[in-house]
Image 1 (cartoon, rainbow, N blue to C red):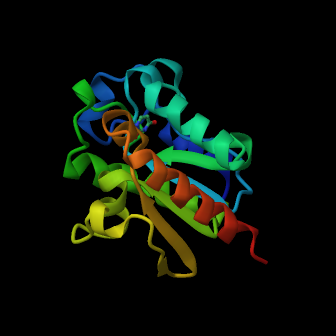
Image 2: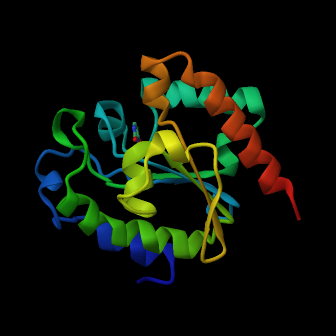
Amino acid sequence: MYNNWEELEKSIENCEKCKLCQARTNIVFGTGNKNTKIMFIGEGPGADEDAQGLPFVGKAGQLMNKAFEYVGINRDEIYIANIVKCRPPGNRNPEEDEAKECLDYLRNQVVLIKPKIIVLLGSVALQNILGKEYKITASRGKWFIKKDIKYMPTWHPAALLRDENKKLDFIRDLMMILNESRKN
Ligand code: URA
């Protein structure tokens, strides 16, 4: 565990802890405000994120930006990272060993940021952070508190691209998150 960003970022530079290193273009470390109250966690980089080295810059990210704009969340005010920092080939889900190796980096990011709220975008984020027994359909829109952090699972933005009906849930969840972040 590193107690500053410089060392943490340096430690990941040439990471070869799992096989995802073989096909990556860029490591997608995470981006945003390191003093934020709200941290978002996605699944893993897609093709656009791999090309640019930034999370949620592709289609799903653009839709998420629109939802952020609608509810009044400024992307510069929050921090966004993923369960795995390198692109799984063909956008498959990260495998268990890949997520396990990469989670140490994410945990270190959480320790440095000290967010009050962590938003879990989709099932992969939910199950890797809260546990395999959690299902996204039953958990989304609900608060789960663990070690002083409030977790809110919600749909992954890519799910909204496939199913329009999920957009309203997503907006509602974002509003709850924003309201909660404004308390005290
Ligand atoms: N999907 C994710 O889960 N993360 C990204 O960064 C982009 C798409």
